[in-house]
Amino acid sequence: MAKILGSITTSHIPLIGKAIARNLRGEPYWKPFFDGFGPVHEWLARVKPDVAVVFYNDHGLNFFLDKLPTFAVGAAPKYGTADEGWGIPALTHFRGDPDLSWHLIEALVAEGFDVATCQEMLVDHGFTIPMALLWPGGGDWPVKVVPVELNTVQHPLPSPARCLKLGRAVGHALESYDEDLKVVIVGTGGLSHQLDGTRAGFINREFDLMCLDKIVGEPEAVARYTILEIVEHAGAQGVELINWIAARGALNGRVAKLHSNYHVPISNTATGLLLLENRG
Amino acid sequence: MGARLREYGIPGTTIFDGAQAQKGHALNRMCYSFNSAENRAEFKRDEEAYMTKFGLGPEQREAIRSRNVLKLIAAGGNIYYLAKFAGIFGLDVQDVGAQQTGMSVEAFKAKLLAAGKG
Image (cartoon, rainbow over all chains, first blue to last red; front, side):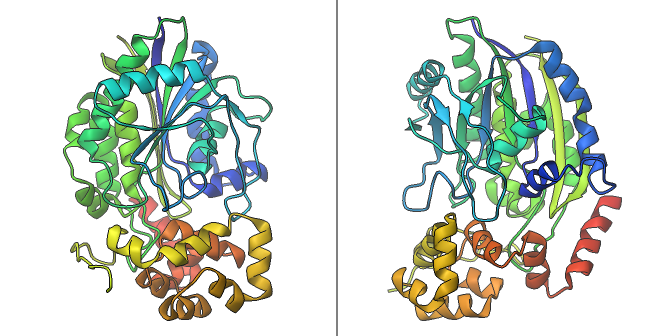
């Protein structure tokens, strides 16, 4: 049976890709951010996952506003990256696990999550930046991936409560998968930030720290907010918090917080990092 | 007939909803095309012809000409797509944030750093 090892949730700002490409990890601006990943690397080296199920949002690479699903699950044998318009270096493609993807899709639809399915799919910085943070060094990725994409671009967005349930359904589906796989859950984006409007640059430290704390043992307390309340408290793009909520949902039993980091700012964003281990 | 615009009551924030999506579709479609370097070059060669090709309306054309992000948002632009437009000029989200808030880029960055001091 597949085993869920834990979850890692992290911000996914495009500028991080440039910092990695230019090897700026040790610069004063970047060091407090990159140093946060040490314990995550140690944990990954110890637990050695086979697969990463990644909750993220696309920003106009794979999906455009002509056809925009609320939830989409990748079912491709491989996932490429591509130019998003501002020159993040292309990365090695990711290997998929179509059998696992279809198992998830069947289980999700059976539970009432009528997801879009993608046999061909490009993944953008919302997916690639966290992967590059978790497994630095380039070359082939040590895990296969299943992307689970949530709409954070065009309102109405799925409610946080719904995203928590989506995560729980993914967790149950993984636990019923009849193959000995070790799975890590990844959730990307956030924390508070706003790129657009006269409120651009909005950061809410207090709200972020509350979410980082509550999501560990009481995710319902974070998932009870409406989308508009999250926009108000965490900024227009702070709604990427729903990816964190879904990722947390996938850990259905007890969890232990092994590590967290919070650093402001990277670009316009308050960055968060959280490593939870699944204790069953 | 125009899209039915709604006010959500969050200061300084435009919610990109169905009304904005309808209003901005041609503009966002053009910006989506900027994922391709070839298209970015074509836009730079002849902006007016490129806007015509994507069917932008007068408000959108003026907003593009002015490089004014608040006007682009008012014309239905979605920030993730507008970021691709800004990228053509080598502008990142901090430049875009500074422009929208009427601050210098240095002052905008200083404001963000101050937010980090908590």
